[in-house]
Image (cartoon, rainbow, N blue to C red; front, side):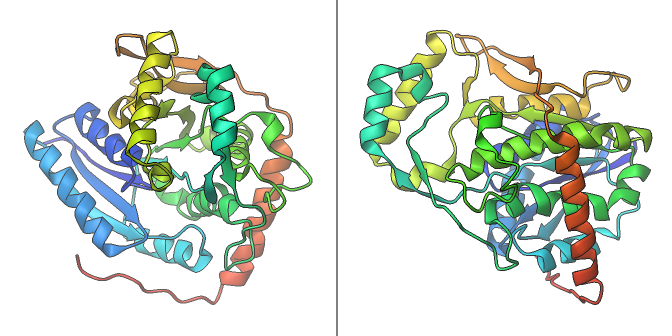
Length: 345
């Protein structure tokens, strides 16, 4: 029997998160005893996701045992994040940590803008859409920018708290960024994006910069950190704004874009999960390209491959300094906090 490894996947109940687990089960040494730590904000979703993973694992007939655990964690609540840290203390070593956080504060679709962009620049409309309406000024109960806390600071804080276990496991940390993480979406005068109307894109730019500023220090501790993006695929975040006609119209445009040469339209979650699991399980532990972003890509006939991109590092050290100062503030705020949220599943 092989060694035991522990894998944490945030946002496991999303399309991408679930497929990250599926691909990890396929690519990890089949003799390895693998513990999958499912994360969600609610217990019913935990049970549902674990059932789905069990069914998939059973089909693989892997000789190594697959165990299941869970974290009830809301990254927009720092007490919840601290509770997750306390729950993870039972593991002496953690081997994989996938930061698959993709929360947005969407308020609908600008259908006039969507129609205009689709007619004048159809490829751009399904690659870098500018018609999604995002709310401005949304804060968490902790007083931070909600998307900033959910997608960047909350996961970063948890990683910093469990560093000893990550070091013990010679872990791979995988941050999931986005194609839409252009520097123009982030203002250094508003790092929590309180005044921004592109908070999702801005949060992914922060992820890029945070990775660039931190991966070398982590490498010195024996941890490999990578930055990836899943390309473009079906996500549940916008379904509530679509009817049956616009949903299938969107899918048609995705397939058309890929047929016309777009390498980023993976469309299905399984192909989107290629890059995250590729960097997590690649055998070359001496790879030196951690400064690149690894993207899930497909050919026009749906054959998948990995495409790398360079990242503008402007401001990365300032972002890390800001995050570490904020971490110290929350360490002080939470030092006397007692948490206990575990319930049997």
